[in-house]
Length: 112
Image 1 (tube, rainbow, N blue to C red):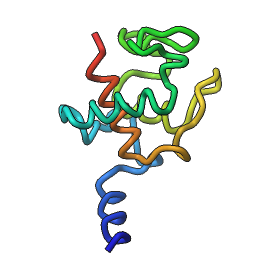
Image 2 (image 1 turned 60 degrees about the vertical axis):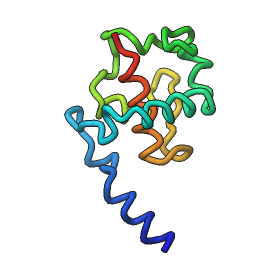
Image 3 (image 1 turned 135 degrees about the horizontal axis):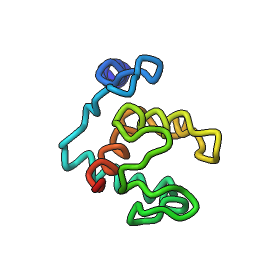
Image 4 (image 1 turned 60 degrees about the horizontal axis):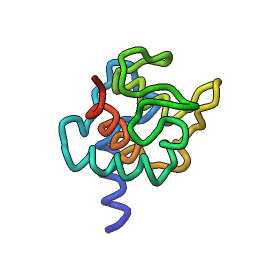
């Protein structure tokens, strides 16, 4: 039964390879997803670079509209999953696709 649930969960989340800048966040608008993303933001120490209020520090501000690697949901997902050449680590091996989308939901809930 656990395998069946995992298959359904994976089928519901687009694979990174199929993702484009236009890929919508499947969890957009879900308050519980943003709350879970907030918890993950702290647990995964994202705040160490982006600050607890997302306004940046060593890492960039996540509340403004100026994003070097793109601020659309699919782009944010890709940046979190794959990392960047300028210091952002890849999280795809440490977080599930749904967890990454939850963090994207949290970030989207705080953008200006």
